[in-house]
Length: 222
Image (cartoon, rainbow, N blue to C red; front, side, top):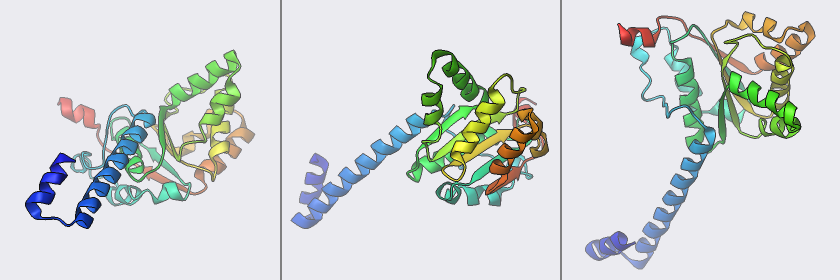
């Protein structure tokens, strides 16, 4: 406020211009506070952005497609983004970078590794909070599930994953990353009918982004 008052004196601002500047400052302050809250609630591993992704290290990364997804139109349309490819090609970075963009566009986001999500659901079965835990996952505008299929699904995990997919179908957007090719997702669900129902929903309205090439981590070491 003191800086604005000094500016008003130095620049001979009218009362109307001074009031506009003060109100604009308050709007920007509130928007910054809300953005900080959305980023914190997203629970990203780290603050990754599209701008700090090194597209030059791997020309096989479809930059045009990623930039198009960064508009976050897929979030508005409740569509899925499937990032698949070998380890180290930037899937998790891109997933969180798209999530960061969604936060900046005003959407609510939640980031979880597949293992973390399924572990929480399994634990909730034990303490009787399963329905409450499962009900939280459809809430964010964008749910990011990282590293799906890194390990086989066990016990009730295929059913839990199906339930997450079913509840979010056409109600909220998802980003899923995996080292497994899309055709390898089917066996994760074990049961044929469950797999068909899950994959039909996952692939409907889906943007499949296949990334190949060298591992960025290995290149950094070499």
